[in-house]
Length: 453
Image 1 (cartoon, rainbow, N blue to C red):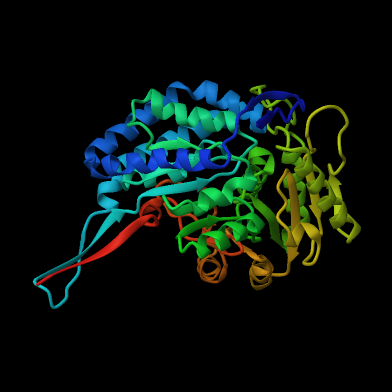
Image 2 (cartoon, rainbow, N blue to C red):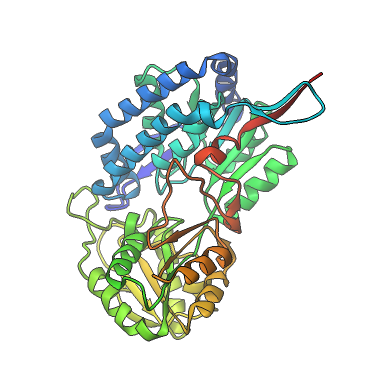
């Protein structure tokens, strides 16, 4: 059974039956049988389906936001916008897939030669709990519009969300089994990856789990996209708009209780404004409310699981023991639920736990840099390379950062975010491949060369 537990109370919400053995293959086979018809469905008709799905998402927005709050602790004031973003993703690909997948003429010795993009077949999406709707549709929308069918193995923390996503397609009148929910325990994922009907895999999660998925998929010679962990740097230079930088750094760090791969985790600040910027950030952090995610006034909900909270606390303790200053937070609260206080660590240096590891929670680490060169050096001193940002008004500094920061995306004077219009993904231990934008829809297609004499 998959057991949904409310992280704010520790109480069981509901149990869901899981598939095992032959049941896994039978479930995947449903999506495989649906593939030929969906592949041959004109793109204009696929687009109509995705538009109906977007409308169905919006109709269920309140229910879906509450479900996320109960299963993984996302505050409802964040859950509603997440549903809207998922609907936007469906609409974006419904409206742009034809352009993204248009045939591309290429000159050769043929009378006509070109590249055409065709679907691969049935895909497997292995999804995390931290953005149950958005991350699902980041996988589903482009894959479906390309003509693939999708098997969705969601995280065991959010079995209700997984079923609700599948129900959205049913309620929207989508063709049967173009999206199939696969409720399996994590230890049975290998069976799904190796199933002969699965042609490619999309995985979002930790670097450790991503390595396991990649090795199994590689053994089966199946392509994959991996979006893994991050320890994103946010560089703040002395000539930046410091109030705006503080606003966005805090927002990026605490959204979803800090449980985001692309959150700003290491705030690297030029030495001349270091103390001033700490003061600005601390003043904003102190105003945040930690509490019941179902309360519309709550800013920060609980950590999704007890083991995740314990690991986060150990990272904070290890960082302080190594010499960092604990400016606020850092104490495990009593009472029910997996709540963790907003925590500010200063004078964090390379080698400390909060610098070298991904901290998945409302913990902000402040790092001092002498100048831009050292800030970039510190930013790159990590095994991860997902996102990065810089705050400065200096055009030359911006160009240097864009060129030298080792990350899959760089935001200048703004927040690192995902957007259906723009590709997203990482380098180094943050993964490979891209989701979203025109690049994302082309990950799971056959880039077929055509040569006509």
